[in-house]
Image (tube, rainbow, N blue to C red; front, side, top):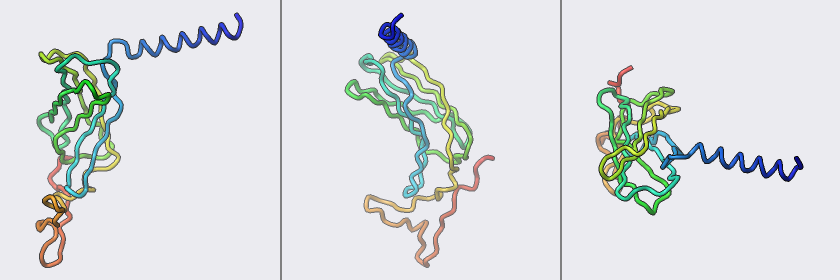
Length: 167
């Protein structure tokens, strides 16, 4: 076998093995992280998916996020728009995120009728815990007015974090 034939055979093998990896999938996980917004004292899960092929009209993405505080799963659902190549889904606000703890996330791509077209199970781990955030937003309103519950009239500040989180 000459070098050209070998290179062509290797290229075909690599291309077909890449196709098998995504065969039958509509999306692949492209990102997952925690978003901590210090200014408004919020934390959220954020997951991004990359479309691998066109979606049926009316498709939805649904995600179930482990609740760091405990209790019921946190659920988010978004419509998938045909024109967008990336799907982004964000959880409701979180409390009690712990550093180095893997939190379970299940993502489902659903048809317009609710049929599960694809399911992805993953986890998200934070490299900081939520104690980096104050329990109350630092600012309120559209003008970013200092929050009087944090910045008191006597000049003192309450930057305390959540103290009632499970261990």
